[in-house]
Amino acid sequence: MTVRTHDDALAWVAHGTRLFTAQVTGFDEPQMSAPSALPGWTRKHLVAHVAANADALGNLVHWARTGERTPMYASADQRNADIDAGATRSATELAAWTGDAVRTLAAAMDTLSEAQWQAEVVTAQGRTVPATDIPWLRAREVCVHAVDLGAGVTFADLPVGFLTALVADIQAKRGLDDLPDGPLPDVAAYLAGRPHSLTDVPDLGPWL
Image 1 (cartoon, one colour):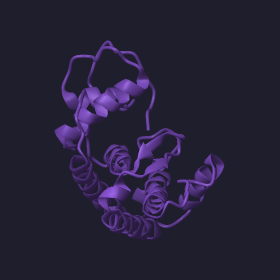
Image 2 (cartoon, one colour):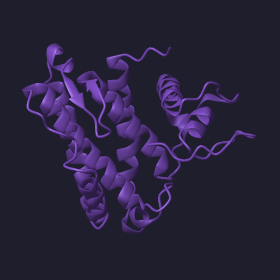
Image 3 (tube, rainbow, N blue to C red):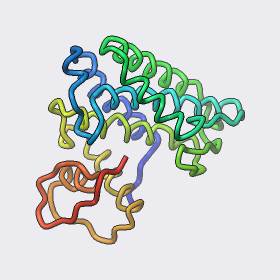
Image 4 (cartoon, helix red, strand yellow):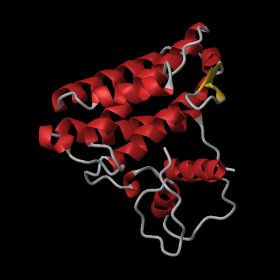
């Protein structure tokens, strides 16, 4: 079983955030409006999703800190509507939203005490988890979606520890007993349903 520490996850959040925001702040309007690597989504949709995810995870941090039940999203429909609305913003507005959301979430997580990190919260998928899972949830978003922007970042640019934890996480969620042979970045990309160099493997479809 892969051991993933709280400090590991926080470091991966920082790494993925740098990769993601560096690309976002460099996009002009045509580049931000271009298709992402996710079917049916432009980069604007993807950036809006990642910014909104930071806001949503901030709700879970608030829940952990205060004990006040604060779901990530009001509903799945509202989540989708917010992404669609965000995708109509300009490149400048999206970059600013991303920056503000990233800083706000980081500052909020910094306020949690050791006891508050152990508080139980509920994810958007309805799973009850300790607040220590929040950085891992965010690390997955910023790291994987930094690749999905389709601007040159690949799974090989992600930390080995993160890729190992990601493979274990997806393997468990997909219920796979065996993994294909190949470089770790390609195995992670395959399991996540992203482009990879592996051969003779079934199409798993996108994850996350």
